[in-house]
Length: 266
Image (tube, rainbow, N blue to C red; front, side, top):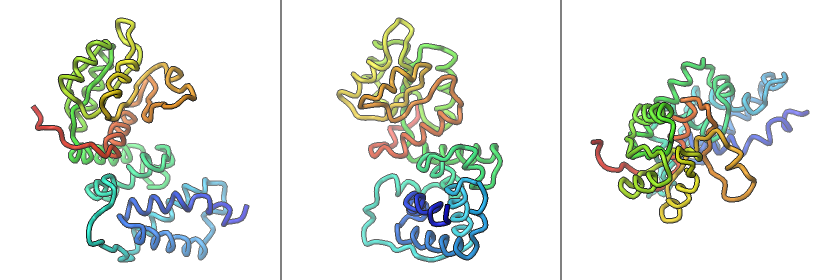
């Protein structure tokens, strides 16, 4: 496979990443162009069996960290999407880690490789990104979960990020009542509840009248991944990794155009 064949399929994704990182397409494209020039001058990193997309992004970040291209053009009015404006509030390294995992869908191992960091350092960067995102869009979160230990774990994760718990529901009926009372900005939901009722049905009733992000955390993902539409955007399988839950909460709120601070903490 030629060098161009290895790289070309990944250029659109690199341009997307570069725009999000730099804040403007013109700035991002300038760094992408510089990256391609560097690769032409020295293609050796692509000669092995390593994933060319990982190598491409790693090369881009080396250029981005070492060269100031000064291509940022300020428009008369900032009309960028909300998520792009929020990105500017994240420090550079946590911003990069968040974009690589949440937007570009690199695995933790791939992200470590691109950034040249150990697992613990990557976790720290994602934690920092999560806390900063919570500072920007801190909200009340409703937990629909019938297992007390799991509910307590989720509560600790949510509060550790800087969000607030609006309530913990163990049944369909409790979920609807707590939602009406607290109007949360995000829901964490199991689908099989204590009394045999369905968290999925509760969420569907809620979403019939309100629009907000929902993260399903379930031991039965096959009940959601049916191939029919709509399917949930955010799905975590039990047993879950805490870092996955934290990253998913940050991602769901970050890209929710309605997300905003909901009142002061109690």
